[in-house]
Length: 236
Image (cartoon, rainbow, N blue to C red):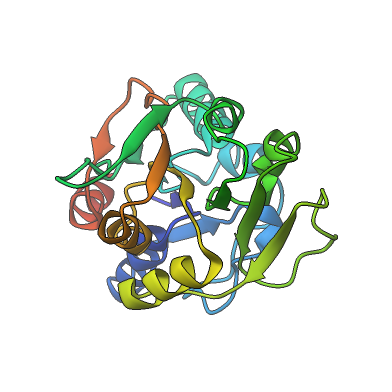
């Protein structure tokens, strides 16, 4: 048996380390042309996702991609169904609003941009890929956090990148939001325990949060935690 682990989350690395410790036969596919390939316990697979999924040596697939990586998940479920491969999706619990939160639920970055009033200062925590949807906010200022140096200038004049690397403790997030005078936070409901600190900071500061709801998962077996995913993996 060779398990294919589709990465893209912090949990994927935890799973890989546990599988390596157990001497499980597995391989890892990394998104983004291997941008997160540093210090993995095994060398990542080469080729496209389709190449990896169609490798005859693969006998099961554990999908630990980002909850918003819908293209990768759809491709994986489709090929697994065609090949008759066991498939499991790591689907961590969503964030839930707590007392004091000021959330507005939206489906996309484009919808989020429509809620932002003139004169607002916005912290976009959804990555640079969706920035184009905020370009029309001429009377607002947009900050976008970037892990690692960007490969191009900020795409419109009324905004800038913030180059920072995790972790982001709550007290540092509070200080950052206060220094930048943020009043709107845009984020995706990833459910990440590491990224939840910005929501805690927003709650304490009374900031408005535009929460982009997670797309529905495929009709397939799911694991809600690393432990559940590891329970599924050896049985394959």
